[in-house]
Image (cartoon, rainbow, N blue to C red; front, side, top):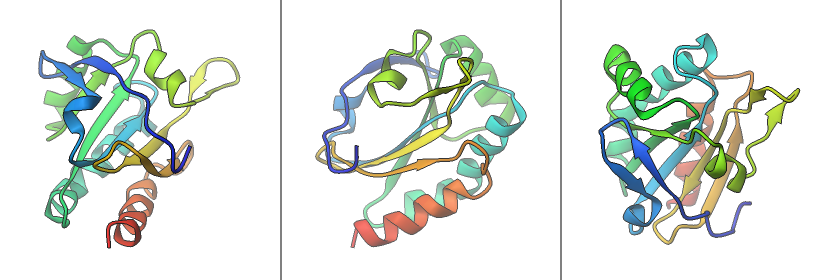
Length: 150
């Protein structure tokens, strides 16, 4: 998908509002898909983004972080408050957005964990699958950003 236009979407957010991909045009952002609020690997993945959030925001240009899973917006709100996450979590209950990005389901029941770096024109510039390496994916994404935003 690298080099292609990211699929357009609109989802309910943990903030109680609709999040639309078209609102991100003109900005860099990382859209990361994870399996479930509270699962150990996904919790670690979200915390990894939280730990580096200020670094993402201090980049030139700044990069926003947005998480997506099948949990409800209400579940996301609780999870976000519990972890004190500084970024929005989006509810993709029917997996339409995950499917449009080609995020697979392993063994028929385990949604993959994938991150997409999307540029200001809405083009996917980097993809990273972090199914089994939640602690390393943020560093890999930051590394890719340093080369594609120069």
